[in-house]
Structure formats: C-alpha cells, structure tokens
Length: 91
Image (cartoon, rainbow, N blue to C red):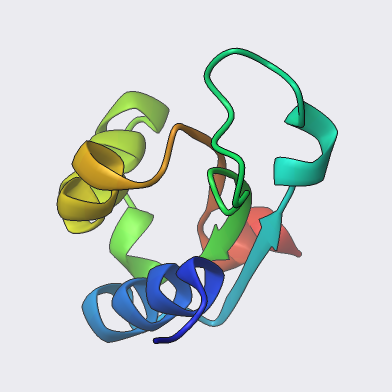
C-alpha cells in the first residue's frame, strides 16, 4: 500500500496538472496529541502551483483541493495545511 503522502500527491497531480507540488508529512510534529494516530501519516503540508487556481480566491482554491482529497480527509488525514499558488504568484 502506498504511503498517504504519495496518494495525496498522485491525486493532486491527476486533478490539477500542477507546475509544482510538494506534500510533506508533518505527523511526527504531532506525535502524542490526542488526535494523532499511532501510525502517523495524518498531518500534511501541501504547496501546489497550478493554472487551475487562476481567477480563484484562496477559499475557492482550498475548497477545490479539499474536494479532490475528500475521501482521504474523511478517512485518514487529520490535518492539511495548504499553500495554493498560480504560476505567476509562485515566481
């Protein structure tokens, strides 16, 4: 079974055709918290650069990403920090 980080990255690449995407597992920073599962792979930081964000507000961008990752957010991902940029904003 692929790591959760890989699953998230694969879904984002397929749906948004990004110029750049980085998914970082930060679960180790939350070890011992009541909501942190013993196996980790629950807290992630994502930076994604895509033309799909052009003309969208930050809230709309986050909603789009959350919809793409809905199954994972409902199941195994507890926290997701997002940085969503257009290619122009990333330059």
